Length: 174
Image (spheres, rainbow, N blue to C red):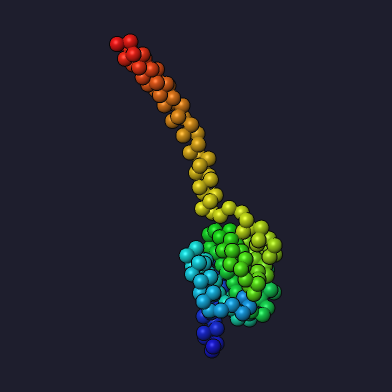
């Protein structure tokens, strides 16, 4: 890689690191290409970047970004997983990926400017994701309206039952 290519990589990484709400630094060791391809596909579907980077380039790119506090952890084989809107999704996906593999480890992470360790990432993975939280908020907002509709409809239903019961009585008498 020549100097201009390195500078381009640094600029691209710097731009991504500056936008990232969550960045997880992981250590992939001895993972075959098919496995990494499957992980990349899952992460891409969730709009999450996965990059294996040279440590010196990553350290340079991290300067002045929220990822800078963990740049000292760029040692050995390094993968950076960056998310730009949902901070829980990358933790969940990596946690699921790690269940079956011993050769993939999370070193540390930066979530919205705060540094957390591997245990913190595992705890983050247990939290509900952005979509789950949105659906819970929507359910809470819809609950009063649903109750109101039921309450408004209840007298009509009761009246219909009374009329049906009366019709049944009149049919028996006739």
